[in-house]
Amino acid sequence: MNKRTKAWVSASALFVGLGWGSWSLAASPAVATAPQRPNIVVLVADDWGFTDLGAFGGEIDTPHLDALARRGMRFSNFHVAASCSPTRSMLLTGVDNHRNGVGNLREAMPGEHLGKPGYQGSLAPNVVTVASRLQDSGYRTYVAGKWNVGSEPYNLPNRRGFDKSIVQGDTGSDNWEPSKQYLPHVPQVYWFEDGKTATMPAEYYSSEYFVDRTIGYIDADTRKQQPFFAYVGFQANHVPVQAPKAYVDKYKGRYREGWTALRQQRLARAIALGIVPKGTTLTTMSTTEDWKALPEKDRLHMERQMEVYAAMAEAMDFHIGRLVEHLKKTGQYDNTVFVFLSDNGPEGSDYHEAQPWLVFNYKQDTDTLGAKGSYGIPGPGWASASASPLYSYKFWSGEGGIRSPMLISGPPVRQGNLVQSALTHVTDIAPTLLELAHIEAPGASYQGAAVEPLVGHSLLGLLQGSVGAVRGPDQPLGYELSGNAALFKGSLKLVRNMPPLGDGLWHLYDLATDPGETQDLATKLPQEFAAMQVDYAHYEKTNQVLPMPDGYTPQKQVFINAIWRYWLPVHGKQAAAVLIGLLALLAWWLMRRRRRT
Image (cartoon, rainbow, N blue to C red; front, side):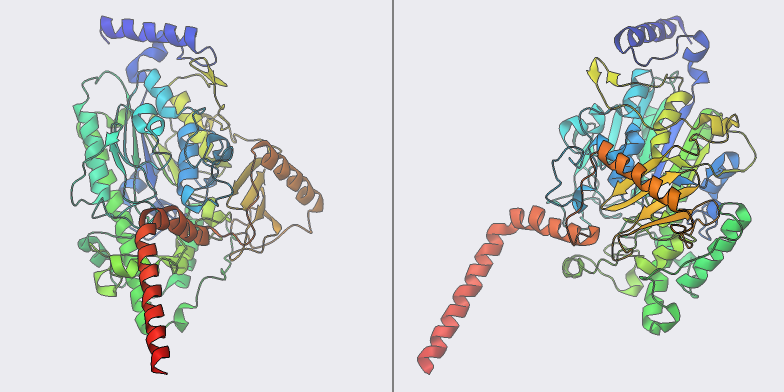
């Protein structure tokens, strides 16, 4: 480090200590030396199931992520929210989603909730991202890919701690044509570069493009003496499920036995790898059809859906491998920490409500699945396999919806292909990254203003082997999204899932022996069952959780919002003109008929 850099770091540390009292960059010279602070790469997959990753028991070829897992630690009891933006909001802030502004996915939020405290559908002004804190401490910071935590000017990455950014503000888009919508939520797909409207290529492949931009940011930055933080938000494997044909063809025939057989195969491998305990049993979801009862044509179509899904996951892994290899070639790999997770469980919706729009905008025939202009949907059957051996999937609070594959790899992690089964949560990532960067835990103020404090726990002790857990057996951890709720305490989980996947009642499971949630302990442990409901009520009140309207389901609300918040405001005049025209035509026809009679 040269004299100018040392002077800058010292001045920065002094400014931090004087101005932000509740947290600071540690002042010791050893901490302030850049090489001792690692580079950090956070990789966020979209809609991956618990055992999609090879290192977690999956058959999909993910060699580069598996290699990172062997170098580091896999977290087998890591939890997120059951949909994308709530998870990403907690990942970036370390604050519960009801307190950071994203109490629900905006597209799934009922009108009665939108705009209420905690339900803005985007990050609130009184939360601070981990990127801002890293940037303030001297990190160079980059983000590429799906953002989805707010497109207001103050919420774009350039105002949220990122030096360079190319992001999509929405929940998703086409993976071949960046400006093509995957559903009619908004008038267009919104892309932003460094806080301004981005000019996107006419065609790309999303995973490749996001990694290209990340590598470009790292290489172009002249501040090589400073560590970097790179956040890559992939669209894989969000619908439309699409992948290059070479990857798709590789999987031809691999899923001929169907989703039930795959679910059982993954369970066996997950047990062998130590991801779930021996004796874990499966449960069949009501939404999973009997594979053998399907007509042959339907089985062939669904086979291809899963072939494309696997191909999309492998393509993402390949491009992650390109990033890893680039860091190795440039001498940056050994000092880089990697964090990988999925934002929620696999997509179990069948997109039935969207078919009137899809038939005019996409192809869904078997032969073209995966290609440009196609729309792949894994659906509830394959989602149940992706989540194996867990129950439920995206949107629901069963373990299949909120337990994510997560790994951390890099300098601070003990070596040895380790699996960590301690209860951990997405809000734990931000404090972990701050401790890795030698930034003291922030409090409830930032630059003189009151902010929401972090609620997560640093995982560094787990990574280094100095502690066996970050939460005590009596410390509750609450969760709610779209009326589906849970509370964890020790190995016990209190959970409520709404119809159609659940019955709307509370159940109790011991995840240490039953991660598949097959044995309800509510009557065997009545005291724990009652006490945990009291704990959940406290969580709900503290975090201002709102009750859901009668008859609400996330899928139905997405469809309603698409009509009322997009179609009618954008196309209302045209629709009214067409309706008036049809009524006039009907009146004319009735008058002619009356005259003839």
